[in-house]
Amino acid sequence: MSDTSDLFADQAPLTGTRTPLGPQAVVLRGWALPQAPALWSALQAVVAQAPFRHMLTPGGQSMSVPLTNCGALGWTSSRAGYRYRPDDPDSAQPWPAMPPAFGRLARDAAQAAGFDGFAPDACLINRYAPATRLSLHQDRNERDFGWPIVSVSLGLPAVFLWGGARRADRCLRVPLFHGDVVVWGGRDRLRFHGVAPIGAGRHPMTGDRRINLTFRKAG
Ligand code: SIN
Ligand code: FE2
Image (cartoon, rainbow, N blue to C red):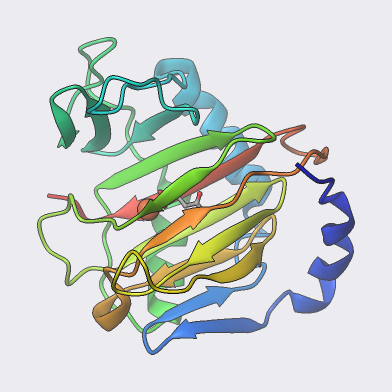
């Protein structure tokens, strides 16, 4: 684990630029910066209702990255497998509604990346502490791969691992900063991706955490 707080120095000049990751995949640098405080306060209301929790993998291990959801459907993992469900399994209540600021941001970012009409019904919220990571995977629990994925980074920076169509394909290492938005769809929809271990650091908004919001049309 290394200290990545020095990476913040690189962020400002990137804001407003695009980093292409494929024919239909792009990082919109700093896209969410103007809305970040509103996203953060809406997030507090979501987690008050549906707190972060460590779910079990299908193999029965506790996931190192705690998660929660908002929207009509929430992504869950358990011994029974991965699935979207309308209710929070801990409370048996519906997931919190998707805050309007979340839905707008996802729709606008998708449009800026060339995907019109994106209306996500699911927002998975991951919280990373230093040293935690997310192993390589594809997002393939959704019904229709015709819709893109919109992923918003808040707080501590991360190195996004951006792979190919096969697990063994070489990964690009893409630094992601507070406010960056990654959109992938179409031909790039099923690319393998993950997150390298988060470095130590402190962010003025999130403290020693990285938050990722992943928007999907799941149902
Ligand atoms: C994910 O793939 O579900 C999250 C990616 C990220 O945290 O940037
Ligand atoms: Fe993913």
